[in-house]
Image (cartoon, rainbow, N blue to C red; front, top):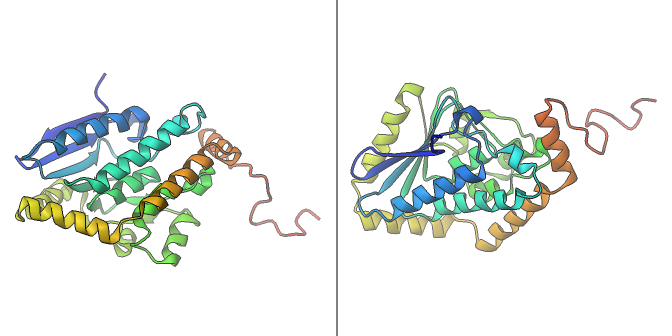
Length: 265
């Protein structure tokens, strides 16, 4: 069985980590996140490594959570904790991270993108936060992007839960560059090379400074994780995830938004 995470050294200072679960659109299973964390920590202890490029095997960067695990109440809390660990380790790492996004980055996949220092997207990419349509809350992702967006933009992304294209994502500050798919790796390597022109410690300290100025306070992160866990274990999440797996509309405990007070009369 192939590892769920592949890693190769592109240059002395730059490594490439690939999510290797293309048959599941690189969904974030517990095992995948554990392997990712192990590999990432290993790179952090390598004195020569300064930049990590993160991509996904196959046509999709990352479709988000493994919904089978998310629907299992026995392991949902563990899955939630590993999502939080993955995002936090990226944000707090001294390494500079570059997400290379092809196809789509949805829900937790969009959160993974947002946790990186830079994101390069292909022209065809769609990015979205469909959590509410699954009976979930994009709580952890919100802590990553809240300070990038205006209130109206957060409402657009989180409440409408509609995907946006790469150009719109760039306008919102979710991605830094949009290029042809064939140029994704070259563009990301160019960013890595440019970063490495700076002094190693100066870059690390600058990233730490930016994190201190723009990051989410730890108490809010704790609140977000609590909300995330609560909704994972809710009846709405059970229905939302079941409806997604069964390719049907969810049956919420209220009338559809299109039904007025006299509907059916």
